[in-house]
Length: 490
Image (cartoon, rainbow, N blue to C red):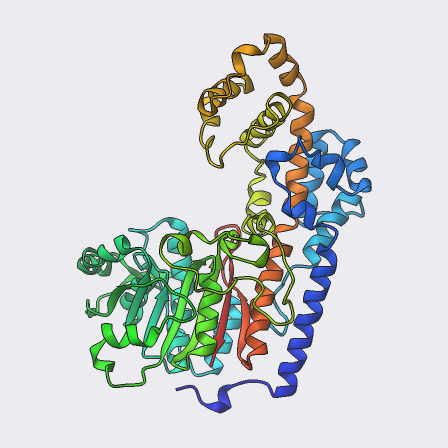
């Protein structure tokens, strides 16, 4: 069990960190105040709401108007890649946005290596990584390889007997913890189908054991020692802050039935409100020795401005007995971001810049369609999701419009003259340039919004009296865009 002496910092140092986080939050909210309309706009309405003229700062729009698309893109890629940064208006926009994001090497945000050292100082042993390439995507394999040794070490340092994986589906993280580190693991998920597949997953653990490789000094070696195939167990549960996790642990691990068992609560990309509720469980349930949470799907969070919207898991598996997912801290009580801003926070500027990735032409086609419908059928509303995946089937906007006309039963296509589509396609280069640049400018705000969400969660834990609390940049954001985790020890 982690001893009192292992905890770092006095009450005064915690207060100093709280003040720093509040100051950072103040900086973020002040910066975002005039820009939230950009973050909350919908790209479908790019033309109908005239986002280019109505939302962009005048100086930035004037600069971009004076550039050809390729010129503007080259400037954007250069500035966003930190190469030959200049003092241009576009470069300043990119770097100002980035300056507000959380960064490592401060009092409350660590790198993965700094977390390793912190866990070692708490008495945890960092064992070699394990690599399993089969049965999961390359992205998931990388995430599990990076995260599992840290979770295992933190479990030992915190004195937790069981690792509980929240929303783990088929449990790739927990399965790796069992294979490589002989950790007792319980995967909780609200999807009964995933849990029902658990017996099959358990049966193939021996095969996993044969193909799993331990990484020592960059060299792969086979795991030869025998593995207890009954270490990993599953249960169906829709998790809220009121879920009694310890009761599930005692039920699935009878050897702890009469004990006040301690567990570590983890989650690799917990969707929506599951992330905040995991932190509330840590705060309110003393059996939770530590939490190691990697959040995602910020658009599925609930906040006051959402009205009657629920996250999809709450709608399909749970009820209304849940608190809003943002904000969590008392300091930000009453502050709202908006659903589109939260959805933007889940997008990856790192990957876009690394791959020099432009948006799909479906964005332009959909915006053009919206503009035509508003002018021709102003009272018609399009149900969300109706037109997904039709763009790859179309080589021109006219083909797209015809297919959309049939799906939506607009009865417009045959009534429009051929010259109509000629005129639309003649304007598309100009509209494409503006849409692409607006998309990239807006994308710069993604990490700012995400930073505010993460700092709110961090501050919530500090407000509740926990000192050993850190935000950790765990993954390479190009490989795994939701790269931050929240780590806390009781």
